[in-house]
Image 1 (tube, one colour):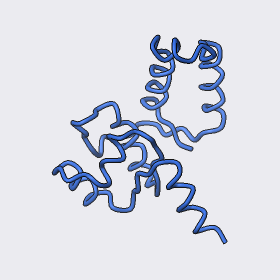
Image 2 (tube, one colour; image 1 turned 90 degrees about the horizontal axis):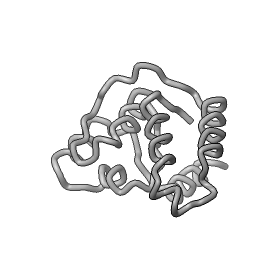
Image 3 (cartoon, rainbow, N blue to C red; image 1 turned 180 degrees about the vertical axis):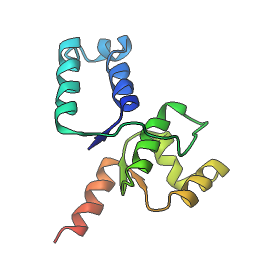
Image 4 (cartoon, helix red, strand yellow; image 1 turned 45 degrees about the vertical axis):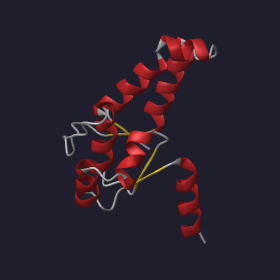
Length: 121
């Protein structure tokens, strides 16, 4: 698992939103801090991630895309529709992404498990 400063800040921001906290009362500041500390201790941190791709449809997704591209990741696993649409969308932005970053697959968690299971003997 990889993280950058931008992705950690995004995770912290999302987990701190009052709407999310109201929906999930167990999501406290203490638990958020514990999660971030756990991620920090277990994940690989990538510094100074350059901007390889600008995503006008959802700029908040750019840190994840650029981190995956910089790390030459095979997969970016997400349930985010804006990210997933990069693999199937017909816009010029989607086509450009697929053309420039062909080895990177953006998939949902179920697809990721299915694909990695068939690669595992």
